[in-house]
Length: 182
Image (tube, rainbow, N blue to C red):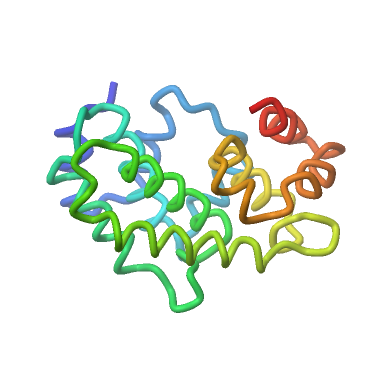
């Protein structure tokens, strides 16, 4: 079982691949293609920090110094276009920031986090193609649905019905169905 202190030690040592393995292996079953997409060299740092932040939010009752440090890391990595690298890493980062924002004690970072979320959701919406997929990619769309499919903010930002329809015939159709049920 991964603990807060283990997350902190691994993040401080910048063991991003190890952190990703530990966080994903902690009760989060992930298909291999999605796991590979999340561990890509260009985004492993961001994805690891975001997934670690999600886990810290799950294990904490209020915003902790570790959560703030991970959030700061994410916020500083956000691109001018609103992305956190890839579509997949952006979806994971948005979920982490939404989780952080929902925690008691997030008022100190509310404006910065809210702005980052808004910009990232705009980036995701602009990446949606005519068929409804994000960046014309089933894998990126699957990650986005896995991370954000049940979030009202995501549904309001993109054409969720089109995305669900595009994913309904894919191997990740269960994610589209789950987004519909919420």
